[in-house]
Length: 457
Image 1 (tube, rainbow, N blue to C red):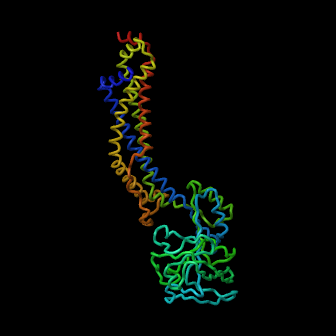
Image 2: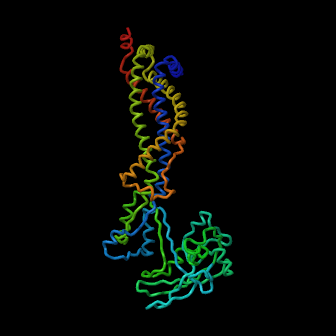
Image 3: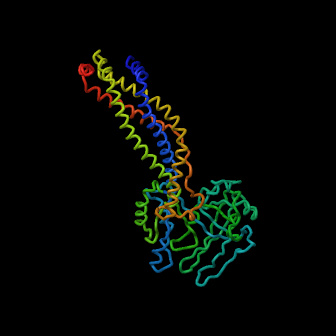
């Protein structure tokens, strides 16, 4: 107990030198609070955007290769290939969608009279007649329900093959209700213009309210969103033969980590993906949005490392000078029989006490000024990024005019000190106190008590 009491009294007795040491520790802790707050907040944002921008894979034809090949025909990615691609070990999640134009003999489309009505069109050399579609059969596209734009008002979502849901308007027009069975027809055709009409027999499991815009650019019943019959992906694609067209199939793949892109591309090529296709992620949007934040993180970490190194060196020098002035005091304690370990413990407690005081003040002040400092630094990073984009010096960036408002750069970080950041700051503070304490201990323990007292005389 004496060691701790004496250490606390020494902190007060040696005010001048301890205030100087405290200023250095305070400056280091305050800088650490600001930089770690910025760094950890930036890491969270970067991880989030990396998931959104960096992980979704896009498979598109390489137009330069198509032009060099001398043909305008793009090789087809079959349904089986898309399914096989989704089984990759690099894939975190995937989504397969399908769309087919349909018409119903006993079902009338909403606004069918406005144009594009049901009927048949003869085609030269075909085995049957092409059905002119008035509605769309859509597989595995339920995003509007998650967004709240559409909502089931009766029944439930389709869970099994050959089940569907229809809009309230389409149901009322044709007196349809949950449990009814409808037949719709889609025309499939080969490259040789051989047509095969497929009949889908679907059970209505639900009716939904549609809050979307009815039409886009053209008022055609086929494009009217009230005429969308929603079902599962397998319902639409199970009837398709390998060489048939007429159904649009889409796929979205999300990697576990953006860095897996090269390995995933190699795997797709091995599974039969034609070399005419390129596999990419949305790096331009990611760099455009997150680039300034990554720059800010880099600046903050570099600055913190410099401050820690220089601060530790200054702290060791100040501690060594302070201990030299206290050699006689320590010599007396040793001559009285106090062991080296207890003397060292007393010196470390003194440094811990000073550090604890600086820690409380540093966290408080650092938390207040971290936000304005972050805003100023981030603004500078955005200006630098803008200059590089306009000058064409950054390959990963694209012209701002080609980016939508949803891809605007992050202009503000809401800095907050969570538990993880606070623990990091406390750990660094303990490290500083230990470094300063060790410097003092190493210097003192080199001398024996008699020698210290003789030098004093």
